[in-house]
Image (cartoon, rainbow, N blue to C red; front, top):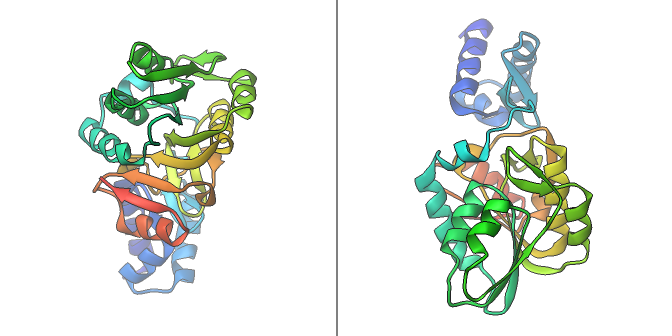
Length: 255
């Protein structure tokens, strides 16, 4: 295969898969990793893709583009429900405490919280707080601040300061992108700041992310793979990404 043909095929794979790894492409095409890196450099110069640590993603994958909460709630509903059900096994015991980040998958977990278990729940999500405000057995702590309309989450210095005074058993966080090399990312710096504070406030960090988020990177990192104890995802997850995360010390639960 000529270089131009290989490069055209690689561009198509990036568009189809959302992310490709240098090592996997080298095996697939029977060439060296150095050859693949040169191919990716050529394709990046043409605007066909963007190189990231260990591979490449579509050219628009690292932009500020962000999907509204309502739209995200309506997509991949079954996968998110399965992820939430699997995450129930990671809840703290009775009289334990947890953080619920905003997002459609964490909201699915909020809907499944057992009514007969006494728990302290802190969240910066307005919809999750509304859902849990009358739940028996739960002590709800709403983290205040400026609410971003697109995510309906409180952000800014107010929730970051409040989280600095809390120490909770488990934090359940959402993410727009998850990779072994770069960690967990989101498009917005204000959201990332609160997520970082949640990571610091929790004894255990659990990321809930459906398989479409794996292998993708967004603008702002809020946690490295070392910060994450468990990732819960669905059975559509790329085995190569799962293997890389597990090699980095993350326990991966496939729902």
